[in-house]
Image (cartoon, rainbow, N blue to C red; front, side, top):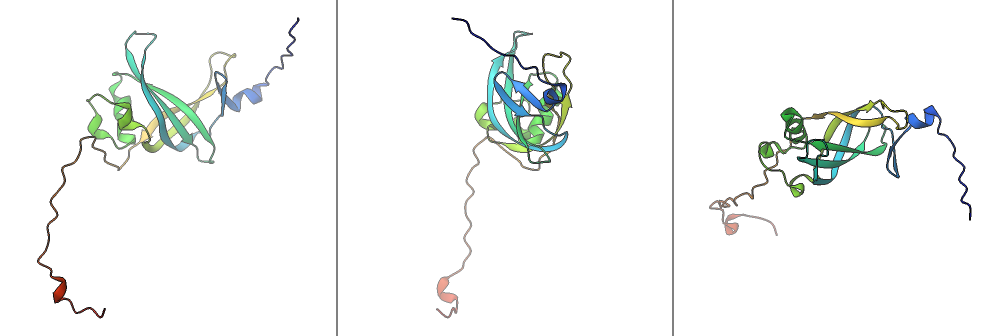
Amino acid sequence: MLFEYEFVPVSELEKTKRNTFGSKEFPLLKEGEASFVIEDAEVVPNKTSGGKQLKVTFNIRDCTGTIGKIWEYFQEKPAWKIKGFLDGIGCQSLYGKPIRAEDIIRKSGKCNIKIKKSDDSRYPDRNVISYYLKSDNKYNPEPSKKEEVKHSNWNPEDDDLPF
């Protein structure tokens, strides 16, 4: 039995309108400020150095409301990249410490995205995070000690309430 497949080439314009990651397609997001939520994080091997790296999957919403995905890989160096990321999600206290996936999954923040032009015509352009906007949220993974509730000397019998 002969299998026939008609190949339809993608135009240059169509190629720049999308990001393709394996069989999943995501739209090419507009450059500029965007919001994100961390969908997943895992430690994966670095195929180049043989070491370990943190792979983070971001759900991104650009300034037009279009939603896409960006994958970012973090290693020990450059340190400014991981510091900027932790500042962006309000987890400054994790800097210099081991980062667990459960500490960052579902964290959100804002970033600036840009379009990285592909060097290889077989692959489309893609979005990358150029930098993270610092978050005012403060996160401490250490369980907080419960503070004692200080009660005043208030007595409900002393109030003259009409009910």
